Image (cartoon, rainbow, N blue to C red; front, side):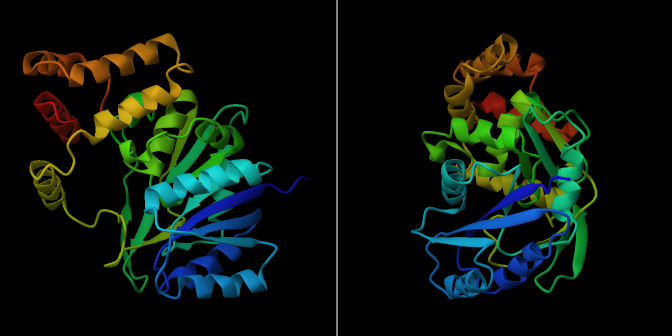
Length: 315
């Protein structure tokens, strides 16, 4: 029986406190042949030294690329480029953060779920996580399982995929790598981009069972959700009124359309085109569009707020 191969894409930056624990958990993955491709994003601490030690011990399983600082999002896109050029022989590809801990069955769980479907289609696995504090004490399971269909009509306006849980089959990885964004500044995050790509052309699976300890600490680049609903939306509105989140969804939609419009079916292409066009129309037309838009968020109140922000013209 063929042993399936998975390549883990890991971007590191000043992760000396936790990266050793994460690497140990990756090397303990069961039932799958796993290799680790690491791009260090210009760390100033001892992260590289820690990884070099592992690279010496496990040179057949781990490769470190020492590079300059791009930021987490662009660093992951660079990893995708490198993997597409030099590591095209893998069956599956996984995103990984530097400060979490994978349970031993995490990779095999994802692969087994993906193998239930036709591998000739783009397939993506993502899951809930067991959120933990810096000392790995449990906090809560997050996120909750999505209530509505995982498809382009959700993915254009909301991300349900936690990047560090994401596993792609080869067809999905090749799809993403075939048309990477020409301007990654227009993309919100690499995991959202992956969800948007695969949900448009293939199938996304969500596993409500957590197989990762998702560490929350003061140095997270982007963490999970430990806030209650009121606090979460208060922070979002503050970011919005400060102008931090203006146009990020519409800019990403435009970049996605530029990359993939020639591969979409006619209905999806037209729906994305109408979404983009509506963002620049007068207030009355934008508001009317929200009454019949096919795009949605998973939770009713989030969907209402999406429509409200769309009407302002700053989605």
